[in-house]
Amino acid sequence: MPGITIGMLKKTAYFVVAKVVIIIEFMAQKLIYLEGIEPLDFYGVNNVRFNKLKEYFSDLKVVSKGSELRVEGDMDRIELLEEKVNLLLKFIAKFNHCTIDDFDEIMGGDARYKLESPGPEDEILLHGEKAKPIRAMTIHQKELVERIRKNDLVMAVGPAGTGKTYTAIAIAVSALKNREVKRIILTRPAVEAGEKLGYLPGDFAQKLDPYLQPLFDALRDMIPAKKLLQFVEDNTIQISPLAYMRGRTLDHAFVILDEGQNATISQFKMFLTRMGPNAKFIVTGDDTQVDLPGKMQSGLIQAIDILRNIDGISVIRFDSRDIIRHRLVKKIVKAYNNIDETKDNDN
Image (cartoon, rainbow, N blue to C red; front, side, top):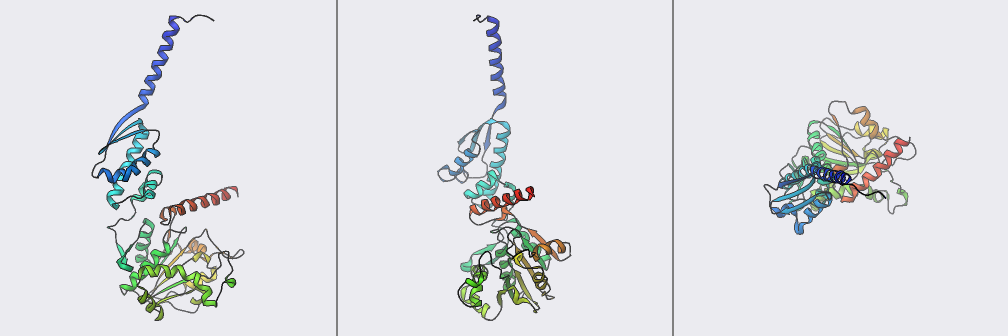
């Protein structure tokens, strides 16, 4: 084995030094100041938010000291962390809180969309039971409020848990309280979602109760029980299957068709042509969950295609960012959407 010469040592030393220079060149340090916020509000109790921040940026060295963060690592990653921190500061300043779900949305999701959501200072639709303020909670919910003011028919389409029906009912109850309409009419197609209606106990009206229950649940949030019972008894509020709409003219009313994707083309046309001169119609539905038997077409899906460009009609598409149920619901919806996209690509 030949000996190692002085020249070889010099060359080796050169490459070692060069490597160190490259590493130093790509490493950077920066101080990020937490301005306009109490450190505890940012770090969270027991540093829960700060620890999650370090998990999201585990490739960086992040050290906290009071109102500043000392960050070391790749400059591009440092700049991304600084952007996320600034968005988090703005979110806390606007909403006066930040849940773990909010934090995950800001760090790993569509942060600007989250920040643009309506805050506490935004318009309250009405005060519900025990003076609970009810307001539009997401951008598309707020858009629904604005669109129905300018249009007589709005179709709100999107996945479960996005608050389409709840927001629509809140708008209707607000209009009733403000004497803008004389009655509220809520309707749903009586279509089985994998279960047979005939096997349910009771007479026809009792069999329909499970279909109409979600509408009652929303109303109970907004109207005291005794008042709601009175409204139902005197027909100020009517809740019935879509088939019962045939032959009626719905005027001076706020009318909501829920689960509109399960109305057939003829049913949907029948429903829309019930509109009186002084009525407001909202249709809500999820065009990915059509429960119609066989190869029957959804009237909602057709209507979105053929009516969207008519003046006075508006279509809003909600998405998974509007989901306000349990945080897992958002992940579940995304997982199923990924399957559907894979099937479409295969076809």
